[in-house]
Length: 452
Ligand SMILES: Cc1ncc(COP(=O)(O)O)c(C=O)c1O
Image 1 (cartoon, rainbow, N blue to C red):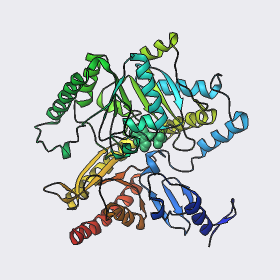
Image 2 (cartoon, rainbow, N blue to C red):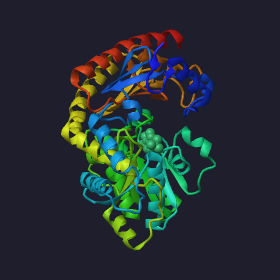
Image 3 (tube, protein in one colour):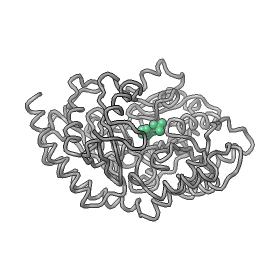
Image 4 (cartoon, helix red, strand yellow):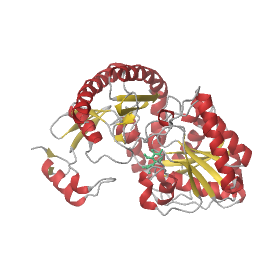
């Protein structure tokens, strides 16, 4: 029995109190048996029995710099000593410096940033900003997307995590995204696929009254719904439609931003400049909850003479700002954006081998250190391992359990297994982790053959 020194509770008590008093997100509480975690360092964490895990999802694709980064921890300590809090109405050094740094990193059309506490409230505030700036009411977003769990963000969200917020906010319209693997259409090229989806979107906008639409929200690279990478020309096509109808293009980079795709912002991979970018996760990598909304210069200027009707007690919180500055410096000093690109290439090659080898692996998608493995019952027909929204036998959870048992920690959404390690990962570590994945997939192939 281990004793957690700081809190003077036993491992058994940690588990007991958690089960008794703590509500976990997105879970049927009675089915949970949470692992007790003792320690986390770099790309690893350890459970209470001393077992070590590769953190191959960077927790919730947020801890890009890895666990236990001393520079960020020191920055937070220093800020706590100096001034833990100062209301959002005041200018303070870390607030000004982080805002300047974020705008310098963002595409060159960007003017200012409104800091929040996470991804959902970044999207909540982006909705309001888009409505205020355009004077329009409707908001478009995509079915295969996750934008957060608070009410407005959940109404942007297209997948089932939206249902409990329904009936939804009027004027929120969903459209289908280019998920080529499951489109059921044979496109001649990526460009053809993009044209098809952009034309459909244009038609839908006209039917909704494009002059009523304030913004189109999209995850630049769809994250938790299976790392769906936009085909060539798609985002440019959406940009053109936005320009044609005076609609704001909002890229949600909560997961894809801050180096995950091998660029500071994912939109740089596709040569588009959105009007608004929302971000969170990688700005402070979970050391402090933080996020923000970056707005184009013309939107920033609009609010020079019009009130920005957005507010949070913890807007631009000093501790978050200090952590954000230190985090951005870590990205720079440790060349993490470049490492994401370099290791992403290795990961891509390993994933292609895995796809080739395993009958249960239908598709692999990857960009930088952001990837997903999609499992199927039948590779030829592409029949999904579990039907959309249904997994009564918990097959996917079992697969995740098998990985965990071998020291490879990650999570899944529907049939997609997320693989998105911290950007600090080295090649030998990546190869070692992926060889565990490969071996476990052999069991999965067998398991699927036996049970289905
Ligand atoms: C793309 C995207 N947007 C928004 C969110 C919501 O962020 P948060 O959980 O910090 O509210 C997430 C969370 O995973 C996300 O992946």
